[in-house]
Length: 254
Image 1: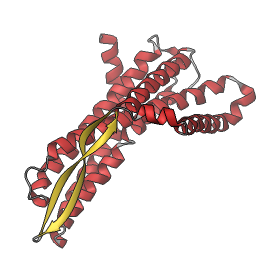
Image 2: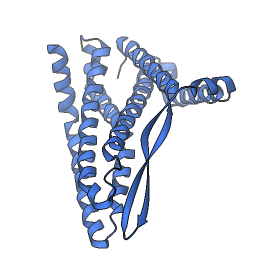
Image 3: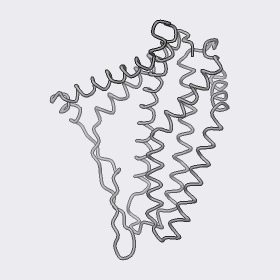
Image 4: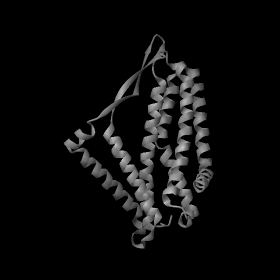
C-alpha cells in the first residue's frame, strides 16, 4: 500500500500542472458565460457551456492518462521500475479518475448555481440528470482510456523490432481499422443485435427545454439504456488493461 501511495504521489506531481491549467480555463469559461448571459439576457448560454464541458470531459480522462504516459516515457523510468505494470497503470488511471471527479464536481456546482436562473419547474430532477450524466462521462472516459493505453502499449512494443519501427503508426491504424471492422460486422448480425438489446433500464438523461411566459422550462425525459453492451464494454476494457499490462511487463522501451 505504501508503494502504491508513492506511485500516486509521483503521478500527481508529473500531471498536476496540466490539470490545474484545465481547471482554471474551465472556471474562467463559467464566469464568462454568466457575464455574457446576464448582459444579453439569454440564460441558455450557461446551459450550452455545461453541455460543452460535459462533452469535453468525455475525452478528459483518456487525454490525462495519455499525458501521464508520455511524461513517463520521456524519463524512461518504466524500464527500471520494480513494480508490476498493473500497479503502474492503475496508479495513473486512479490519478486521472480523481482529476475527472474534481472536474465533474466543479461542473455540477456550476450547474446547481445556474439552475434556478434558467428553470422554473423545481421538479425537473436536475440532480438525477447530473448524476447519470457524470456516470456516463466517467464510464465512457474509462473505456476510451483502456483503448488509448492499449494502442500506446502496442506502439512502444514495436520499438523493439527495428524492421517495423518506422511503420509503427501504420500498424496502429491497421489495428484500429480491424477492431472497428469486427465491431461493425458484429452489429450487422441480427440475432446479436437483438440479444444485446434484450434487457434495458430507463434513466433520466434527456432534458427538453421550452420557452413559455418569458421564462425557460425544463422537462426530464427517460432514456432506455441496454445493459448487455455495458457488460461487454466492461469486459473489453478489462481485457485491454490486462493485455497492455502484459506488454509493458516485457519492459518495452518507452
